[in-house]
Amino acid sequence: MSTGASGPSGPVLEIADVHVYYGAIHALKGISLEVGSGEIVTLIGANGAGKSTTLRAINGLNRPRQGSIRFQGQEITGTPPHAIVKGGISQSPEGRRLFPRMSVTENLEMGAFQRDDKQNFAEDMERVFELFPRLKERRMQKAGTMSGGEQQMCAIGRALMARPKLLLLDEPSMGLAPIFVERIFETIVEVNRQGTPVLLVEQNALMALDVANRGYVMETGRIALEGPAAELKVNERVRATYLGEG
Amino acid sequence: MTTAAATLQRIRSSSLIDAIGLLILAAFVVWLIYKFGENPTRFLNVGIIGATNGAIYGLVALGYTLVYGILQLINFAHGDVFALSGLVASTLIISVWGLEADTNVILVVLGLLATLAITVPLFATINATIERVAYKPLRRAPRLAALITAVGMSFIVQNVSLALYGVDFESVPNFIPRTSAIEIGDVAIQWNKVAIFLIVIPVLLVLTWFVRTTRQGKGMRAVAQDTEAAAMMGIDVNRTISVTFVLAGSLAAVAGLVYLLQFNIRYDTGFELGLIAFTAAVLGGIGNLTGAVLGAMMIGMVQAFNEGLDGTPGSDWTRSIVFGILIAVLVFRPQGILGERTPEGA
Ligand SMILES: Nc1ncnc2c1ncn2[C@@H]1O[C@H](COP(=O)(O)OP(=O)(O)OP(=O)(O)O)[C@@H](O)[C@H]1O
Ligand SMILES: [Mg+2]
Image 1 (cartoon, each protein chain N blue to C red):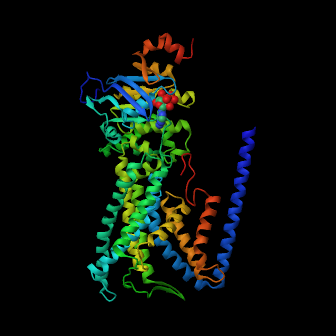
Image 2 (cartoon, each protein chain N blue to C red):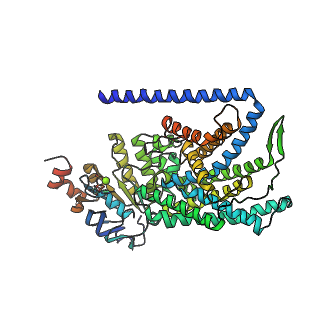
Image 3 (cartoon, chains in turn brown, cyan):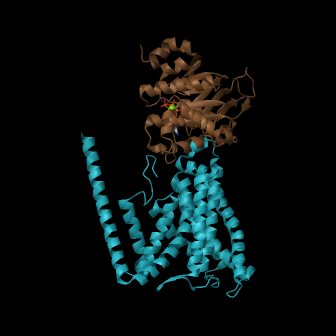
């Protein structure tokens, strides 16, 4: 089930000492992390820690001032976003960012924009509808008029339409009712089981650590802690800060 | 409690505004019906003039609305690009192809097509170059910077026209006869007007088809709705913006020729016409293609009725009326006639 040119042994994504600035704001102060093939890796941390900035840097939206981002063994730092997507990284961004005046179907189509193999397109659309039957009922509806939960499903579906070799998810459970949160996490596990490595940013640290293999904890632009998810889950500091205990 | 009361208040006042707006609209429609009853032939003949001018305004308005939709930039230079394209078309027709009023119809058609074959790619390139040179470097700068640059580009293009063509009006012979093509009673549509629709309607259909169904067109809509999300989907944003300016420049070139076939043109024609076309785009709901044409048709009609019917303020007031309508529409329906109110803003 492994994908990519670097073979089963090398990590799919390697980030080393990445610094990102917003004007004068030093948002990422030397981030290093890895996602191995077949892994679910979670990135947790307080608001403003730099989680979204990290995903945006991987996607080419924020250009690092320093450091290196390697995907399947190749340097992608400074590559424009559209080329990075074509290379196989897709993202379901924070706040969903659907195209509000396009239908669900058109949004899903946009997810497959850079793909050359149009023949598998219908099949992939079916796969997304299987994961989220609700979207199938709503497929003609303008995305901007759907409920928050439905929009979130559409955003994840759209990211899957790219047939990514690495899936970036930024707070996929945000603002969702508990049953939908369950559904989203099941979907993440299912997608990963089918062979796609996932880098998952979550506020819901407990559930994220439940499904992830490994985790990183960010604090104000730095990685404060890292390790196997099972270990982070019992870590005192993590429990006190992110799991609402202590 | 207080927020509920405030919401209620807002709903009330907005429905009041809607009611006033509808009242004004109804009064206008009643007036039109009355005028039609007074003298149907004149009314229809004037209406045809309005529709023809509206169609030309519409071609120019599309260029504004396309660019605004994707960059939220009012490309003031668009009107001047349109005027320059008309001037270049006049040179090609008169001095290069040497077409004259009595030239064979087939040669005229070929000559006009050959003109488009040159001006369309030329002005598509010029327009895309303007974007690359003047607007692209300012994409991350405050909106105002790009706007001022657009005003500057407008002056530059206008000055190029002035330098090349001087202050005189350029015109071409009446190739297309002013004889009636369609005649119902005393209502007549002349060939030159029919010709305009024969050009404008297919252009509109092709443009709509392009934006609705092609990959590049869908990319344009995606960039217009959320540029960053579009980049995240693998859409090449820079390329998409260039394509938009290429399209807008092509439309300007077509509009330039169509205008030239109907009217005289000179270096500053684009200023006035650009203002009208931009107003039309806002009226219809800026960013909305159908809206731009609809708004342009409305302005064309209002202008024709004001100047062609009795009991109206007359041509001295046309500009005031057109902009009065714009202000009224913006008060009663800020998003324009066909603009959509979305959470992200139209
Ligand atoms: N466009 C921007 N301009 C300026 N500063 C920004 C911008 N985007 C983010 N920041 C700042 O960068 C830092 C990291 O932001 P980021 O959005 O990556 O945090 P996050 O970990 O995703 O937070 P959250 O959990 O709230 O989504 C914050 O201090 C934020 O204020
Ligand atoms: Mg975030």
